[in-house]
Amino acid sequence: MNGADRVDALLDDAACRLEAAGVINAAGEARMLLAHQLDCSPSRFRIWPEALVGDDDAETFRSLVAARAGGRPLAYITGEREFWSLPLKVTPDTLIPRPDTETLVEAALACPLPESARVLDVGTGSGAVALALARERPGWHITASETSSEALAVAATNARALGLDLACVEGNGLAPFEGEHWDLIVSNPPYIPEDDPHLSEGDLPYEPRGALAAGKDGLDVIRPLIAGAPAQLNPGGWLLLEHGYDQSATVAELLAEAGFRDCFMQRDLAGNPRVSGGRREE
Ligand code: GLN
Image 1 (cartoon, helix red, strand yellow):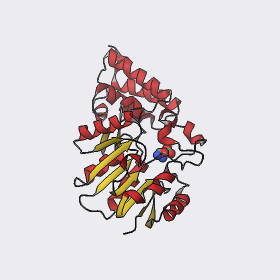
Image 2: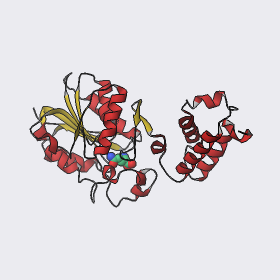
Image 3: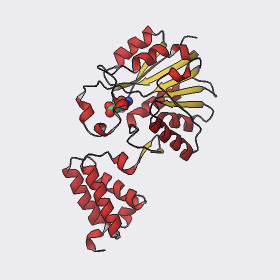
C-alpha cells in the first residue's frame, strides 16, 4: 500500500480518466464505482478522504474505471440501478431503467382502479415498472411478462430481494394470456426505429437490441399491443404505454382505432410526450 492509494487520489485520478472519456458526471460515477468496489456508501469518501484503499481493491477499481471509460454502462458494471427508489439488479439482459419511465408508473397510479386490480406489465425487463406498482399498491395482483427468460429471471430475483409479490410469465406480448382479463395493462416496449442513430450512442449499444428497437418506425411492438389489448382488458380497464417523444400522435390514432376511450398523453421530466393510454369502454 502507498500514498497513491488514498481514497481522494484514487477518485481524482478516476474522475480525470472518465471526464477525458466524455462521461458527463465523471466525479459522481468515480465515487459510485469505488463505493461499489468497497461495498460502502459514497458519502464515506467525503468524511474520510485520506482513508487508504488496499492494493487489490485499488487495482480492481482502476479496471472498473477503464471499463466505464471504454463505454460500458455504469449500471452494468455495478449491476444495479435505482428506479422509483427501489434498488434493482440489472444485467446486460435487461434494459437499464430510465427516470423517464417513472412517468409510466405515475400514470398507472393515477388510474381509477379497484383495490385488488389485476395488472399485467408486458416486457418487464428488470421488473422496474411492475415492482414500483407492487410497492405502491400492495392489493394489486401483478403479473410481469418477458420474452427473454434471462431478463425474467432478473425480474424474479428483484421481486424476491424486495419482498414484493410478482407472478413472472415467459412469453411474447399478450400471447401467453389468451382468455385472461386485466384491469390495467402497462408496457415500456421497444419503440426506437431500427435505423435510429440514437441506438449507437451512450449506453444503448450495450443494451439488448430487442428491448430498444422495433422495426422501421419503432412501432412493430406497440401496434399489435394496442390492437390486441381490448380483448384482454376488463370493461373500463386501462392500457398505458411508454413511447418515443415523436410517436404520441400515431399512438393516439392507434388507440382511437382500437376503440379506446378517455385517451390521454403524459410528458416526461424533460417535457417530451412519453406515455399514452386509454380505457376500454364499459
Ligand atoms: N427511452 C429509451 C431511450 O430512448 C428507450 C426505451 C425503450 O425503447 N423502451 O433511450
